[in-house]
Image (tube, rainbow, N blue to C red; front, side, top):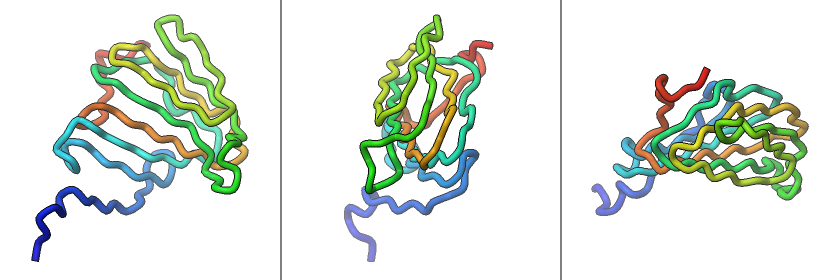
Length: 137
């Protein structure tokens, strides 16, 4: 028998995505709302996003240790560009980055990854979309 509130409880298996194991909870598919959440495990240096771009929605990025015994240590070097000037921010500790709608961001380059990182990617949108017309080449 179906439970009255089961639509609010979502179980998701781990899938293998472009960068390795990931969880994705997509607003329009899973919640019928404007909130999308992705969890990505990064284990090696990778240029995740080469070209700067922007979106019509707010986005939040969280760079966290995947080591439960050393959550305060990122043990990585990540570079993220922000603004039309592509001002580079070097991330070497657990960090959160708020990217308001319209803010140009990237490249996103994981230069050094000595221990696995958990990248949490949250958007206030029914799904994450990167439109070609908003990519700056």
